[in-house]
Image (spheres, one colour):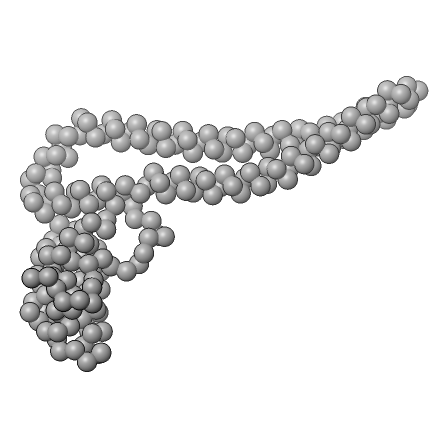
Length: 211
């Protein structure tokens, strides 16, 4: 099998994928063959160093997220079957999708509500300091020195707690920001491939293809 035959067969097996994704995979395998030919292999040897088009196509599809993979494999079997499942099954998958999104949004909102609560409490404690100072000044003006001293002490304690909580809030915000990003990636994983996933294409091997 030569390069053109290999790529033509692979493209036909990937017809269930969008044009852009299919072209990307074909270009990748074409480059793999060219690289092996530059290393001194003949065209046929370079092709033989890859997996069969069928194995490569299966590996590419298996590398997709769950939902696109299921849709692509169903479409490969029958476009009519795919549309039938989408339309007839809408009474099941649409409510499930809505529930899935609702749960994801609720968890995401709860994460940031917790962050907001930490900051509100921190700011409230810090704001108590100038308020206590003002009350202490009024106590001094009124001649109630013990009350003024006690109020000033309360203000200092609140300021210390507030500053400590601000430090905690900053750390918690960073941690929860990472948690929220991880949660979004987790929720999107059935639909979208993560950027952190490996960039190499599946299905490539340096050994000879399986017959």
